[in-house]
Amino acid sequence: MATLATRLTALLGIRHPVLLAGMAGGPTTPELVGAVSAAGGLGVFGVAGMSTEAVHDAVTRARAIAGSAPIGVNVLISPAVPRPGADPDRVAEVLAPLRAELGLPHPPPAGPTPATPLELVQAGLDAGATVVATGLGDPAPVAGAARDAGVPLIAMVSTVDEARIVVQGGADVVVAQGGEAGGHRSNFTVPDDAPVPLVGTMALVRQVVQAVDVPVVAAGGIMDGAGLAAALALGADGVQLGTALLVAREAGVPDGWRDRIRAARDDETIVTRALSGRPARGLPNTLIEALDQPGAMGWPQQNAAAGDVRRAAAQAGRADLMSLWAGQAAALAGPDRPAADIISQFVQGAADTIARLGRISGG
Ligand SMILES: Cc1cc2nc3c(=O)[nH]c(=O)nc-3n(C[C@H](O)[C@H](O)[C@H](O)COP(=O)(O)O)c2cc1C
Image 1 (cartoon, rainbow, N blue to C red):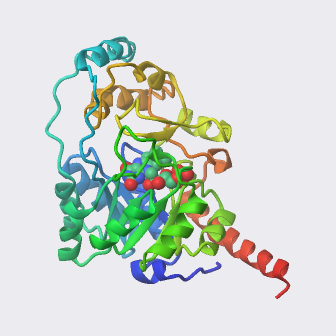
Image 2: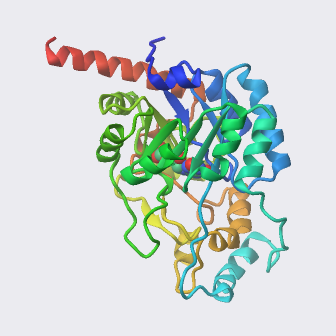
């Protein structure tokens, strides 16, 4: 197979410069994380929202599949985002009929206190994770744990300013998340009442590469080897894949979500605060419509409020009531296939693209 050796592959000890985005809420199963790492990429768990016991168990299972290859854990470090006019009773009223439809108790029973990002990272490291990754905030709360464990810290950002902040805070790798990206926007410096920064991947990656000295990983809208080659051409040392790996066989993604990804139009995804109280890109559905109301709360209250509905809907395969995070290039996802095939198609496709460009340039 073709090889693409970069500063990132050397730093992380991986064969291919391809990272699985930690995707909290189900997609990053132990099987997916283990398969990506075993295939030479970096498998990363999205562990936000899990208990420390579940993290320990999941990382242990992924580690068994990955063998000696590195694996990572990803946490969300978002400060609380209060929302003026938040009305928990109004949100509960909206959720009541959806719970009835899914056979869930209303109101839902109180859950355990969520583990902190540091506790989640520690549980992952104890179970054998060898990389710490963060999104949605300044990684400072977990930087010490990564340093003490002697493992690389990867931090995701959405602006050049944020890139400088996370490098100063100890990040060894910066993920530049372009506006095309599926899932939550990783901005943490722009106030909630200001427009959401949606700097496109091409514009952001090139500027972040020039602003920091550490390896930069491009994320957002990268769906095949041509996208990987384009990221390398911009000076990135690798890519982070969310949507492209949602159709991996091993991903914890119900069929209804996979179908919506493949059928998506380029202009169909929306950036909405309705599901979690923070801006995130996904495909519109009934749940977003229902929650997009005056009285919607901020992060993390809004995220927690409909958690039981989203989980039950995912289990029941109800694409209308789960979260359908996806990036703008979702339609390029292709058929369901093993993660190892997706990784090798990326690497081969990038090598082919680079060879084709070499011929264009006339050397
Ligand atoms: C379903 C889904 C869940 C995500 N969850 C997380 C997460 O838990 N932590 C994180 O840092 N990024 C998360 N992201 C964002 C990714 O890190 C990445 O920025 C994005 O997927 C890249 O764009 P793409 O989807 O077009 O590949 C998620 C993305 C998706 C699609």
